[in-house]
Length: 328
Image (cartoon, rainbow, N blue to C red; front, side, top):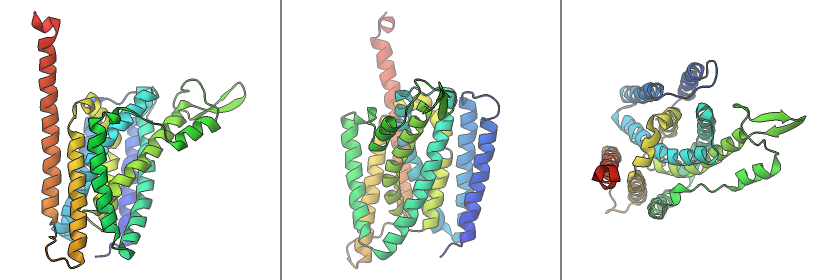
């Protein structure tokens, strides 16, 4: 079923309107911190919006397409939660004032939408012409799952290494010593200079590019419909900056989330390879239904989240019992 161009325009236009309202409400007056209550309202709103959109797909395109959307949405949302760890490290690394962090995240989200849109268009066109790319995507996801577990065991996710683009920006442009409000450039002693705000935005944007390399093959393992791929990514990204503030310190407590994501990416990688073999006429290769994918993805995230919170509570209790105050 070919989705008409007006459907893409309607979705993009609707999301832009929602984003504009979001910005108008948050950015009124002087810069201020994003409150937990405010973040909670917006996260709930964006999740409800995604559920409503999935219901609309069910009514107009059938349960299979709706299932593909929800499976893709949950996968992309889960990957976005993992990405928030890196955002948290970047914010801490560059000491971004909390009142301006939501603006930095907004730029990152807009860049992510643009870059993922390009990757989706290229990926859809390539898969139509070169079916062997399903094997490549499957192998890439399996390798990514392996590296996630390996790096987590080595605690490498606690470091942020500046990429080539970020190092070039640092060398090419004179930078002010501190932040100048939320400005990305400022004139100091008659000389135009960039502020650390621009450096942070480059760091977030270039990191988003690396995230897209993981997320796009993952969702193409669940659906090859470009419209579903785009909308699942868009809805997953829209509430990301509010989720950053809502989770706050909880990010550090989700210790098992990386293992859950590695399992999901590994499952999708195997699914891609099996379905490519099935399409090639290999009789023993099964075709994994979307309801099973949705069950595995949703169940994995629930289990790893609950397990993480239980471990955090147990560790906290043990820490209190072993402390001098607890011992007395």
